[in-house]
Length: 252
Image (cartoon, rainbow, N blue to C red; front, side, top):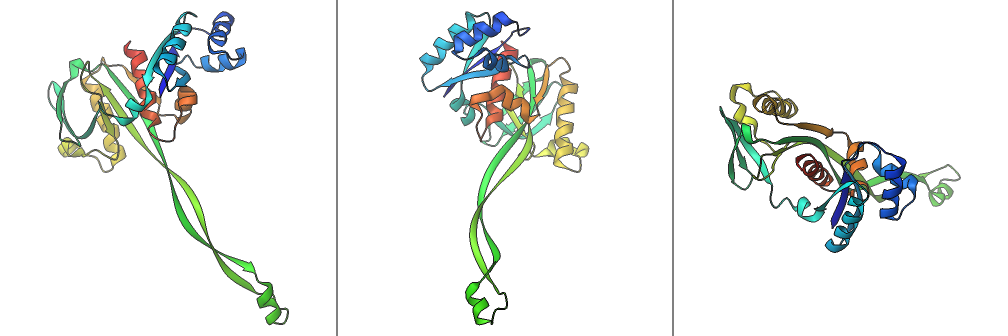
């Protein structure tokens, strides 16, 4: 799936709203909703890359910047390095991925930090036992109200969330730090008492070592992700897609 996102406008003028509505073939009210918040904002998704390119050209003709992202490739994380361990050195961050891959990221080459909240939904089947009125037992008991146990299967949906940090450094693979998937022993004596505290310390140390690197944290709020992704919102790995879109906009 290829998503088309827009970004780079300064204000929602009537002219831009009308132009975007015409390009997308939607009502002006709908177009205005896509422009709220200053972007970026996904406006369409296609299975065919050529269709995505044609729409991107139309949008650019309205004076609005656009980009195309391969959502499936992003969600597969094929080019990313999922960090397992890290170590702060004097001039660089040494990281190791879950696949054993190692990278040395100089602080001077770090170009962007993005933090967000990843939400994963999962379902499980549970057996629920209820007591229900039993006419048969009541008649046998001479009219005394009786109940019987009834079992039924119920599908229960739950959600788990965790913070994630995306580190971009020039042409190197995107480094992804997930709160619950990192070994924090690289902190040594500075290790905190909980994963949450360690993750916060990791973010603060990165910002301390690379003070000039832009930091984006709007994706920590779930509603910001929903507003950005729109029709591309999915149940799994939506944060990866949102972060990639934001990164391409900010690093363009």
